[in-house]
Amino acid sequence: MISVLLSGCAVIFPSGRPSNPVAALRYDIDRVLSDSIFVPARPSIKIVSLDKKEVLYERESKLLMRPASNMKLLTSSTALRVLGKDYKFKTSVLADTTAKDSILSGNLYIKGYGNPDLTTSDLDTLAAQVQANGIRAIEGSVFADVSFFDDLYWGYGWNWDDEPYSYAAFISPLAINNNCVKVSVTPGQSVGDSVKVVVDPQTSYVSVLNKASTVRDTVIRPLNVTRLFKDRLNTILVEGEMLLSANPVERQISVWKPELYAATLFTEALQQRGIAVDKGASIGTAPVFAREIAAHFQGLDSAVTNLNKVSDNLSAELILKTLGTTNGAAPGSAQGGVYAVHRFLNTLGIDTTKFIMADGSGLSFYDLLTTGMIIQLLEGMTWQGDIFPLFHQSLPIAGVDGTLRSRMKRTPAEGNLRAKTGTISGVSSLSGYVQTLDGELIAFAMTMQNFIYPTRLYQRAQDKIGALLAGFSRIGRTSKP
Image (tube, rainbow, N blue to C red):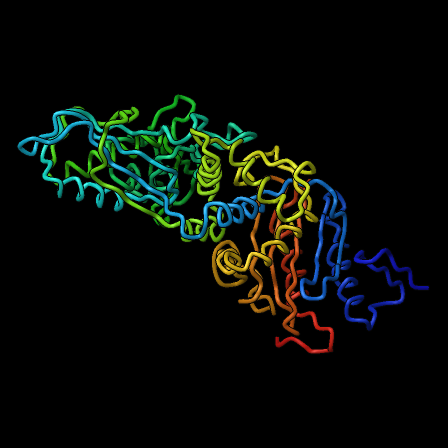
């Protein structure tokens, strides 16, 4: 006897795989989820046909789960709607006096407005603009102005031991190089030599404490690259051992007080152009009478693409705080950004009292969403005709790019499925869109949590389900191998 659960739920067929295409799809997904890795874990899944308005599969979709980086779907969609796809992040350079005879007797202020993608080369562009103003010397300081945001430099619910990893870089409206430095380590020329350490960009803002050595054939103390973060120092510590034949090792390490890091890099960019700066870099707010002499702009479209494709946490937090300024509140805060997200989600019919959003990236362990709510968002975004194409394009493509570049290759999902990944300790998520063999648009949301096995096992299950959806047909088509 066939036992059929409520509409949209899994179907149990003791006698084998059914012939009905939808029932067969549910059967196949159930088989994926019957793996023993799910005995101690909780999967929450909802899959709907957006074209047919039909729930194809559902399991515990009302269960509150930690979304990990699926939280970025909320942040990026709201940013496109509220800020607008043509929004530009600004970085401004202001002077509090007028230069006389090429000498500025006062100070420069580099003010950040939340650009998540500012780089060292952009600072050089700003320095060139300062030079074009005829300034050859600055008798005062270069101040980092961070008044656009509040002074909370980490997200609510972030773990203290996430520092100094790049995924938990400090939040500042004046961000540079993802608020990190790249540390490259290579073996010494001979056994017993110290390893070679190169920091990029080369700057006086960080120092290196090299305690690592080169060995011939056995590593007793594994190489460790970190920062003296407990001491709130920007000293890179390299310790342990490295084989003489080893390949280079690269690490992205966060910096303490990234706004001062940006001001230091800007000061060095000025000096490289022959502009003398007497008093170096500091932190301070530009006076209201200061005039702008240089500016750099970065589009939200590229920021959202970077946010979702590579799952950049800093981008999410900067965008969230920028959203916090849209109602006229200053400075921008994460709480204000969450209010903006709630207002947008309400327009999609989502009950914002039924979930918790603590940050913009999903790194927080306070975040709680349901897969049913994520489906509401994914469906609601398809109604936003002016911004949906950019939102859709910003998602990683299976087997092609971003965080999905190595997943679902050689399956019907490759080059087809677009989805946001999410990973924190004990949590793995995947939510997005895929077209079936019949061209039917499907939205899906999957979150798996409370596991201690390797994350790749749960990603493999998600990939199998993604391939099943891409290979689904109501009229008996078959996917190419």
